[in-house]
Image (cartoon, rainbow, N blue to C red; front, side, top):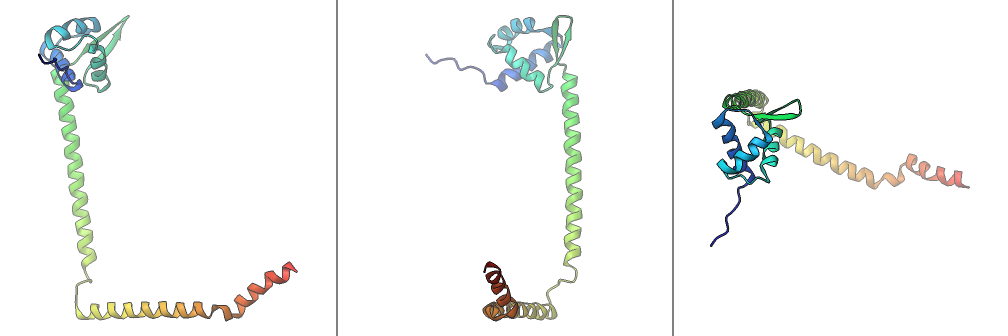
Length: 163
């Protein structure tokens, strides 16, 4: 004796959409609450919640007429929504391809003049040597900074103003 497992929300949603697509009719909430448990096995307590989630996701249309709410969803609307989504995704794909081509052209353009050759290698070595020399000179300058007359004057001027 195994316990009967309930339906997941997605299963309930798909079964609820089947009701709309099979009947191609307009329903009130009370009609759906009667039909869904009998024909699709959706528990009566969750029918309203499932229906509201479908309305929130624009899969089911709703309209208030007088004091009643009417719900409907036709297969043509679902097909149209999928076509629109497909067109949007295809457009995004095409935009992505164009960006990729533009970036590849920029990379190719940037590579021009950067081909590996002896002159370039020599210039890069010289640049590295000059950077090292600059760093050494900066370190030496820091070492002698204490003896700089401007720095000595800066250090003494606040001491004079304190007195």
